[in-house]
Length: 387
Image (tube, rainbow, N blue to C red; front, top):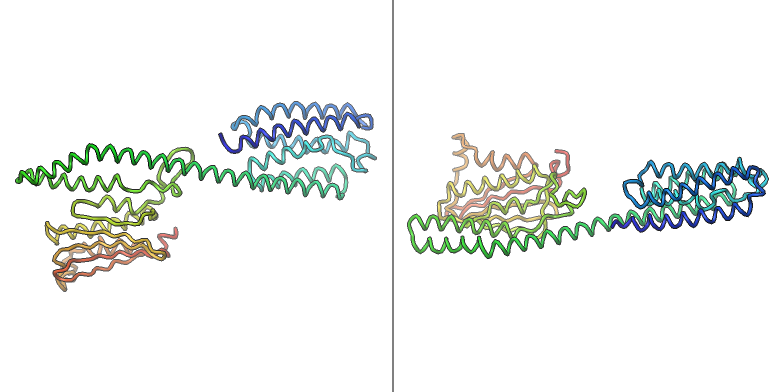
């Protein structure tokens, strides 16, 4: 049940009590009215409407702005009707209006529905009606307006705070459910698929030949699957949660999850424990550049080479390092490749980072491997929504 529902029920009780008070006040002063039957007609309308709202406010689909607008209009009209139905001398003396405190109920309803600002607007409208009914700005009118404004803004603020807390609780419950489901899947996969892959890898290495190649593939799949099931769950602060579903925000992606797909038997991925969220196009270009660096490792470093990917989330920039233990690149090799029209590094890696406002630095020492460092400053148009 929504946190708002108890407030609507409390408001329904308040309206009923306020109506009873208004009727008793009118009964004691009806003989002094210029048109007493008109006053009873107003009380009849307020009674019928109060009973209808007690039914409507129990159902979220009925307590919309059309109903609340009629509610506020009835409060204003009943206040203004006092000037015409009551004795002019009593009006000038500041006698109670026909709805008395009932007129504050629509103000509270607007505050619950729309927050402090709409509540303040409704209080201002009702207060203006009281000034028009009296015919002047009196101390009592100002006092009532201030009280209604304070009550509306306070209740509206509390409601907005309660809604925010409710959304936070929903996100926490969804995160807990997602984590439990991931843990359950990880247990099932570990007890079945991962053990089978490990067995195939071990037996293939023992048999040799084509079975060894099959075992090596099984080992790679085992590492990739372990990386997949051990990834952190979706960051629900960045999730698209219009209702109760869980889904990633299509505008942003976690770079950790994208880099995790590159892990394998010869590739180790290290990343922070918290999400590294980037706009989706930027995240994909960054990971594509890292993938291109890996392709160069397999193409030039040999079949036995290993690679390590490190993701660093710094306050002012994001760094992805791809390092291998291959033979390295001989001096002048990249310049020769560019001259020959082979633009793998300059386009697939450097070009991608340049397009999103980052830089790529390649460091290689013959005999000691190669490291590609991809740096993406946070203060770039691509990350600030201007690219």
